[in-house]
Image (cartoon, rainbow, N blue to C red; front, side):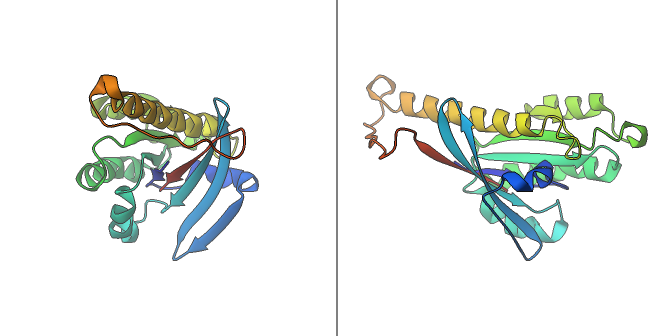
Amino acid sequence: MSMGAAAPLCPLQAHRRNCSRCLSASGIDFKIRTVELDGKKIKLQIWDTAGQERFRTITTAYYRGAMGIMLVYDITNEKSFDNIRNWIRNIEEHASADVERMILGNKCDMNDKRQVSKERGEKLAIDYGIKFLETSAKSSLNVEEGFLTLARDIMSRLNRKMNDSGPAGGGGQVKISEPRSKKSLFRCTLL
């Protein structure tokens, strides 16, 4: 399963201790984290570009394989919020039409320095038909919820696709091999 985060300050940063592997290459942070969702282990691959413009062309290549993308802005930085529309436009041009998307307003623990109201974030998400959460990487507020929500949405879409491609949906047969272990492992990539 693939997901992407194309925006400043990925909230997972505070959860590095939960990553099984973290590396940084060319300024893009790559992290792997395994979470359990509905009894299944899901491997999250997270590519954090920190919303840097110089990675826009690199990230377009990753969009093609992404199943979900998190767009993160800093609530204390108006410019980072304004850039979300540009990132969405880029995603619409380069990602799969059915990619799951989510907007996160980060640093909600810094309400005294807030430049972007929660209502503006919610309205932007509604305008694009995207889920929205405010998070705090510092206090971990809604960080886990954001990843689990996006992963759950991706799993739901995959399950619908599998059901639609069966005999009732008119598609071809899908053969599912039994995994060696009792729990199945799904992969999820976050940009």
